[in-house]
Length: 472
Image (cartoon, rainbow, N blue to C red; front, side, top):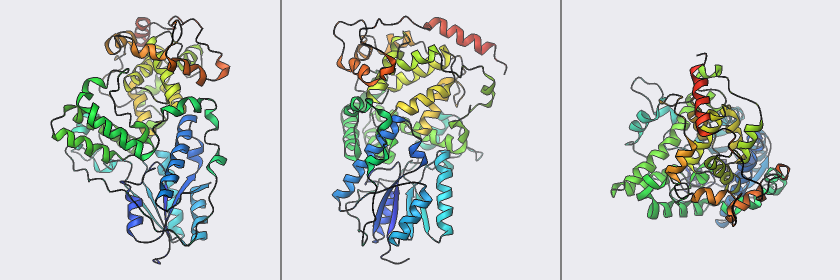
């Protein structure tokens, strides 16, 4: 390898300059570094909100690189062919990237690495998206974990390396190759008018993510045990958006929480457990990639899910089920691109249990609407809620969305923030919902609020009857 030949760093869901092992390794070599972002098939197949948010993140990363005298080269196409073209144009002989673990990304990365090695190009993947590589966490018999609690007991006392510092300069190549214009990719097109509504709720980039973490650790984490279940409170880290795009690393979050835990904060340990839950999702999608597309418990393939778009599904998507907790959550999703975690469990349970609708429909809707969409967490969360996934609790756990609201939103602050119908002076966020949704839905804040399409009690009975009469 010539000391002057560039190293290409292929950015994907790792849009940061700190604690970035692949970028750090390239910088430490002393050789020129060529940062690249590729709009490939997997990017183009993303749903509207995550694709738009990824575009914002790439644009922000481009600015961060410019601030340290570097650039982000944008190219569109098959990654192997794009990288080969850049190698031909620049004389690069090495490509680094951060590992991914979902089946589509693994398949892509294996193909790229094989193609580059066939060309005599060094191709190296680095840790960056997780704290624990999935294959390094094993049961006593050498297998993978299927239940979270023993997984957590295995990893909670593991040594997590300290985060790497922030890269402050990169050696530039002798000349920069041409770059696409990000706007030409049309990553925001599918958001339509919703982009303007959601944009103020986005916390964009590495610095915003670090500010979020600092605020959470300083002001919230001590009460995290109780506040995290209250959807009207500022009681969570809200870092899922930034973790999903790698604008902050899980190691940075873990060590910030570990320092508070050392000071005696019980909430900090609970937060660390939530970070491990994210790791567990990737542990499962690595060892059982079918979780992304098929029932994790094979016997659930015989369950008679509704798999069609019907009036009940449309009401669920529109936040017009007549169940306040469900509707408030679905509207929060459309306005902010996110949804409180307690609310996610409620809307998922209602769709899969009360409406007996296949979790794939909900998974796909979240994939289209979430700015914090994550392939592993989304798949595991939906299957956990449906009863077809990795959960020790049987199917008969059916969340009652009415009693859950009484417990976690007693004053109805969450509901009043997100539901406008029937209110003389609706919250401005409740009104934003009608600015975000498709015009074809023909919805207005002056509409009557609907009666429940399936009541809490009737839905529970419906679900348990279906369970008792199952064929497996």
